[in-house]
Length: 165
Image (cartoon, rainbow, N blue to C red):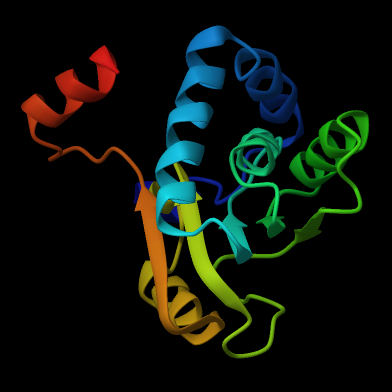
């Protein structure tokens, strides 16, 4: 039932709230840690961020690995607007592209990316199997997909470790 009525993307009002909250130090530290982890796996080439939200991870990824070509997608048009705004304000429009797209219908050719990442959006996907198939389709042979999300059965020890970090 929740999947039927729960929106896949964050609606307009939620975008404003999420954008405000995501500027806090705890959120920014989270993006920084994830960007370092991603850069340790892929420091050059092309990365796709699915569910990019306000684009903070893309900004931190560019800082961690400036040679990356970065693309972010989000299903919510207001989030795409916010992400583009943040990318522009950071002077990164030459290195970062943000588009509107759903995880289960990615507008990219096969084998377009060296890595696909997603942080905190998997639990929103209406059709996760189709999204995972799309990720497989757009990632190059030998590439990676790193999906970061907390789910209801995440072991408590992992949640405590993440909170400490």
